[in-house]
Length: 244
Image 1 (cartoon, rainbow, N blue to C red):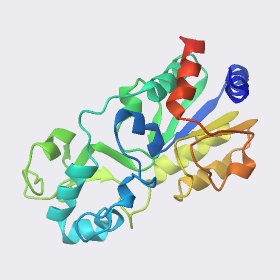
Image 2 (image 1 turned 60 degrees about the horizontal axis):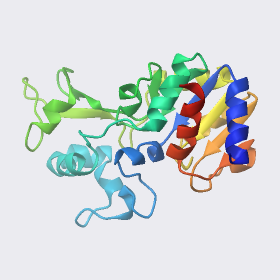
Image 3 (image 1 turned 90 degrees about the vertical axis):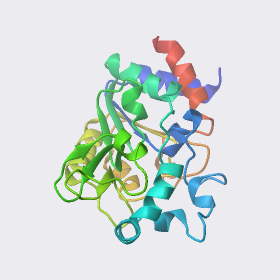
Image 4 (image 1 turned 45 degrees about the horizontal axis):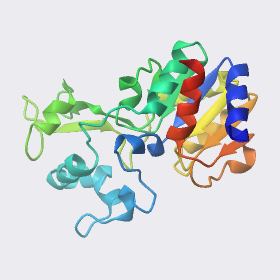
């Protein structure tokens, strides 16, 4: 067994309050592209526009048709299923090892994988709300409609995801800080830790072990007690075998 994997397993064994912080890399094995890799969402243009422009609040307000054309094509993956990373995190929660997950992902796969305690920093594609009357809708309202999905009241329906130019939900952010403060072990998985304020949450950690599992370097590597540069699905398959 790889020495770093063995060290990770020993840390998990000795931990009682693990918090997982996850990014797009966690969902790549489920067939959802990440954002910043060579093949990621931000590496290509959509027509003449950059994806970061399209998924901004101002673009949504001004060009909702174009927003939804991109959103359905590039950000909604109805057939994606949880992978071994999601299910193993849920397993550790059920074993009493984990306080839950803080995620930057909007796909809902952590909950589908069995996690009960999930804080979604950037919202979720599974919830949508009328901007006029506040009525809530599921994802099927978005996928089954053409063009801009409209509420019964005539208002435009907006996904409850955090777009560029929008702030994070305060209650979710506060709960995430509290969770990290409570943790004895923080395990960051599949995120480059460059998007703030999400990335800066790690600075609240004062526990015993800070672990980073990513394929690339992060600005917080120098603070980590253990760094594993391997595919997260391989690492979590090893963890799963220890706790099944």
